[in-house]
Length: 237
Image 1 (tube, helix red, strand yellow):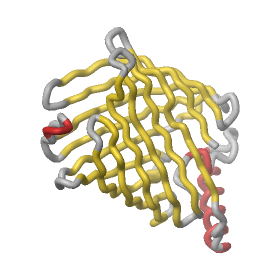
Image 2: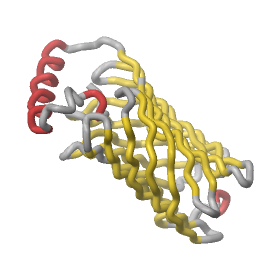
Image 3: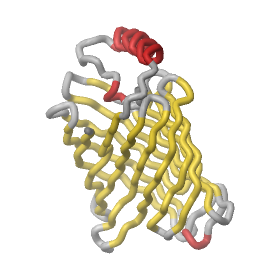
């Protein structure tokens, strides 16, 4: 119904191949019934502290939707707050129309409101879904009023160690096609983030986690990289 691992994890004791078979049959029945019921979903993918000796941040990555199997209205927000400087380093909010285009894949179009580092509106074109071998994938292009093009790509995978303990490697890349002076953005990869989170699902909908991130940032003014510890909560409803 929706490109998210929570919606097809039948039972942890069922092998992945059996789960895939169940998904195919379930998808066929849903298509045949033409299910137009309205559903709602909200996920706090990241609510976390991230830091080391030099950097201390609060980060969030939240998304939710309302709609049916084919058409949905998505809301997404991502950003970070810098404790030492008492400022938001990056923060945005997206409002998207999403259309199912293939099994477990949605095409998305809409608008993004960037609050930091500069208050702007961007058009958004993206795709989101499950790649082969159950990789959660999200890619989006952001086009501002000056014709500048930025991009964001996310890739995550869930490895079940036990029925409650899950390891999640995750990669996020932000890029820009041009130097953007008023945002301090340099053409190329502006931010690269790769890490691992180990979470324990107290219940399926609520899981604290710990882990680490390697972060590399490139702007017109500086280039920096660091390894940071993370601790946070993941929840969905």
